[in-house]
Amino acid sequence: MAEHNHNHDHADALSGGKFLFVTVLNALITVVEFIGGIFAGSLSLISDGFHNLGDSLSVVLSYYAHRISGRQQTSRNTYGFKRAQIIAAFINSVFLIVVSGFLIIEAVQKLMHPEKVDGDLMFIVAVIGMIANFISAVMLSRGARGNLNVRATYLHFLSDSLSSVGIIIAGILIKVFGWYFTDPLVTMIVAVYIIIETWPIIKKTIYILMQGAPQIDCQHLRKDIMDINGVTNVHHVHIWSIDENSVIFSAHVNMDDMLISDAEQIYEPIGDMLKQKYNIDHVTIQAEVERGKQEDFFFDQGKDIK
Image 1 (spheres, helix red, strand yellow):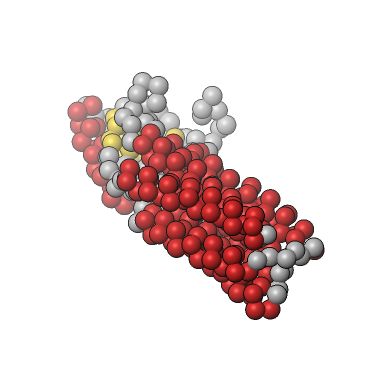
Image 2 (image 1 turned 90 degrees about the vertical axis):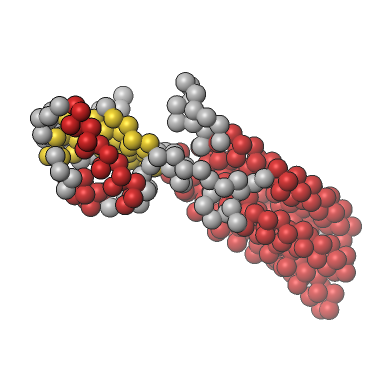
């Protein structure tokens, strides 16, 4: 059994300074929007306050998960703690979906029975909220591309920025035309947008937690392994993701009958090829001569792992 492991460091997407600044900023905005929403009679402001409360909780959870994921492996967690960030992304995304669902229900009721709203106060508070959320989103935008956890948090702030823009427009329409229905309408539009943006993250986090394989052309992968000198067959293959950046591969590889020291010379080109071509950074190979030659590439007898 041979193991080929490539580790790569990831940039610290959430530094302590960013964490503290963004958390305090959004806690303050949450209070402002709750108070403003109550006095203005604006559901969209109150809903934005709930989103900002979620943002604050999201940053705390994301930062904590980010710190946990960097811990070294232990005898109880032999693959480390990288999935802490996947779990955090899942929790943050589910929270957004649930809150959005409740806000849609409330907005529908408000649309059926529009209530008077203070457009001026609504506009002022929304401008403050938009600026704060935009600053927070910009601070997290750099780490959002390669990290599901940070992306889920980033989407919190981006959605709130868009929500604030919608509230500003609604405030203007209420002030100029007296269209009070625009307040719950904006709430519904933003809630639907958040659900649409968040659902792919939920699907991907579930896929990773279910040990799904990344998008890899397995026929080409098998051919690439078979093309390596000394390999006669490959079977009993497993490919799965620890997080969105770390892929693990294990396989039984049939080789010509040779010394173990000679077989080890084949492990390295297999590992290098898998890393360079398929971005697989943790490879485990079990060398065999005749055993398992008739088995499928993916073990398909329903009893592989008991």
